[in-house]
Image (tube, rainbow, N blue to C red; front, top):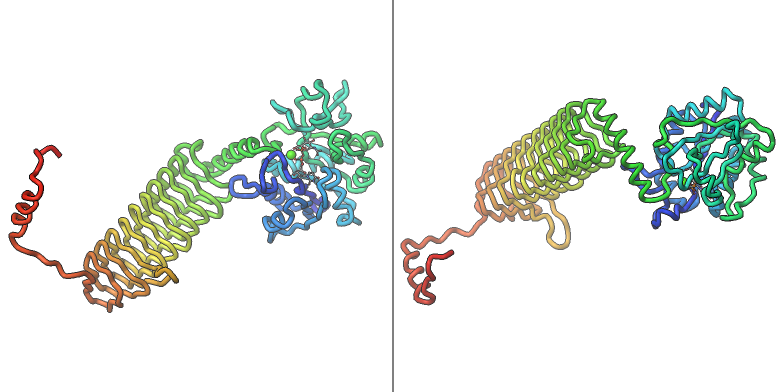
Length: 470
Ligand code: UD1
Ligand code: CA
């Protein structure tokens, strides 16, 4: 690949998506569309990767930030041939092969692109293009061949005759060109009489007229040439890519109980012997360790789970770090910057945000822990709330090792509870609790002996009881 420079066309608006977002920025299993061809070219070791940007250029650049690519601006999207022409200056002096890919064709396999390059090189062709036979060629450029099967030209959908529209062989939009032959030929591409745009496939006809050698390579897997022009095609691509992700994960030892009902981004890593129930959604830069169990309808985004973590039904984990052996849920919500050390339990209907929970700490039921530091082996009773917000600012709660917090406690931050302290159930804690202290933060109970009978009598006098029908 040392003699190959790649050009990725990503300047179009993508009108058919009917979106305010440029087409190549639409996400497909956790990555914007344009990232797929870019990563592919980098994996194959292209000497340079040029990305032609136009619509929402700044956003496209941002989406590719940090990758070793160069951006070329296409002022107005005047067609794919016009887009390629914009790279002429940048490629001045380069005499090798230009690999041209569309920014909206994310399913191409490395091997297919590599074999296109190999075909082009070994045939010493001036141009080589990838074709596919598809069940529904609507929307694609059709490959026109003569009786001997020799390539003649490519006709776009908008210009095709009814008979041509029935041709099932399509142009995948992936090409190799000899750089020196391409740019002069591009100058001779006329604007489409129908659309007024300059179509890149027309350059093939120009080269053929100049008696230059043009090769075609037909792929055996038509799914990989899918171009995304519409939302329906985006969903179709997601189905195909999801299937590939599932194969990769199952091949690496992950159990998917119902792959068709599992939604895992291409960016997610999962260790062996992890079991995934239906309805699980794993997104973004998420890593899951080995031997975990993710029960139905969990969503985990940009989070790291260690080995042997159990996530019970209906839990949400966002941008958090969960160490080995933790048990989460059912119906727990771990919001960003939650850090759970080993063997922590965050149970039924609990919410945690920006908090560290030390090893072996338990928060089993109906609790909110926000802006807090909890030590090791802390036990938090049901219904405990860190009152972290006073209406103006957020404040921190610190709970040291081995503290026991009784049920239904309010911890009014900022507040500290020292090591080994015990807080009585129903307390509202506003003052620091020193280590080993027992704190009662509640009004003393008033008990009046024998008063119940008198109370009932008084009530009955006011409203006699109805027959026992409740
Ligand atoms: C194109 C091909 C068609 C082929 C199909 C494969 C043309 C004219 N037609 O059609 O033969 O079968 O791809 O998927 O090339 N772009 C720019 N600047 C522009 C126009 C487009 O950068 O001025 C970019 C788009 O962002 C897109 C790519 O080029 O990533 C392809 O453009 P698109 O409009 O999707 O072409 P198709 O109509 O799909
Ligand atoms: Ca397209």
